[in-house]
Each structure stands twice: as structure tokens, then as C-alpha cells.
Length: 114
Image 1 (cartoon, rainbow, N blue to C red):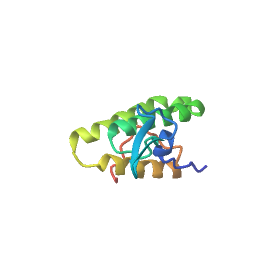
Image 2 (cartoon, rainbow, N blue to C red):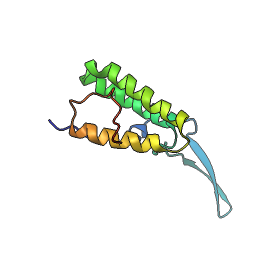
Image 3 (cartoon, one colour):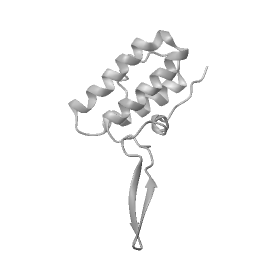
């Protein structure tokens, strides 16, 4: 059985933002334009927000995987504390791509090949 890779950023499209409008001054005219919600994962905090949404959807069908997902969440959140690079983001994407090919595998094991 094949899984599906989900770009976590798409889960942020309907996520509430603190700013709903912005003022634009163009050609001497002031106008109000709606702000677009965050659609890129730029920090571990934004990733966590998206992953929690993913977990809630995923666990509605796979309740037995909840503890594995919490462990995975902890692993990814620990990575930026150990390194200032965005390696955690690359690891996450590659891990979830592999997970899509083998959905029966556990979420709680670190993939040392990555």
C-alpha cells in the first residue's frame, strides 16, 4: 500500500494569521489589501504548527500512530537546537517522502541514512 507525501505548507493556507489586511500606497492612493496567509515553512515554529494540523488529520484514521508522531515531532524540534542550519527541514521532507513509500514503517525511528 502506497502513502501520499503531503507538503505541510499547504496545511497553513487556512491557518489564522494575526494580520488580516495591509495598507498599500500606490500612485498617491491608499488602499487596503488582504494579507495572504503563511504558505512557506520558514521556521521550526511554523513547521510545528503545520505538523500539528497534519497529526490531527492523520491520527483521525491512524489512532495507533499518535505516540510515534509525538516522538517524531520531538526529534524534529530538537534538531535546530543542535544545529543552526535548516537541515531539520530537509531531513523532515526526505523522511516523509520515504514514509510515503513505506507507510507501515514507524514514525519514531531516526533514519540514519538521511
